[in-house]
Image (cartoon, rainbow, N blue to C red; front, side, top):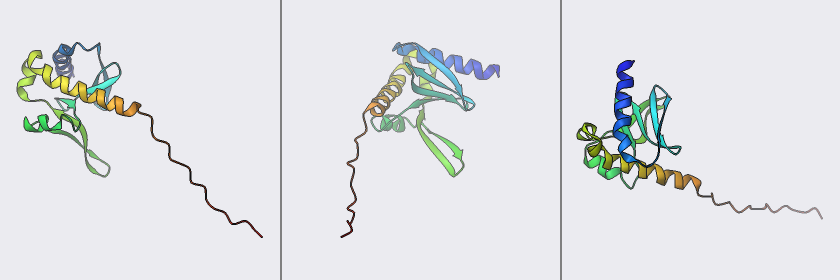
Length: 132
């Protein structure tokens, strides 16, 4: 257990270079979620650091040969919008910072998307036949 805590602490230290606000971590499903201002931008699980991605930054992670987060669900293999970071990014906060910024930006975009009001559907009244 100490090894997992050491790895978690090391990841939090690397992510501390963001300086976008106070970084918080919370245990979840055998791993740890990492957030700033309630917006999760990283997960520490399976001895890996995973950063949030979206369509805007996914290509950069894929070009760096990062792996997508997968797990076995009830209906088969499932994926989440999180990718590993390149190995060299794990060497220092300076090397981690650009990748962490991509994850943070993806988290901000996801939060903005969630806060958009949903368009209300126009109610359609059914025509009813009136008895004669």
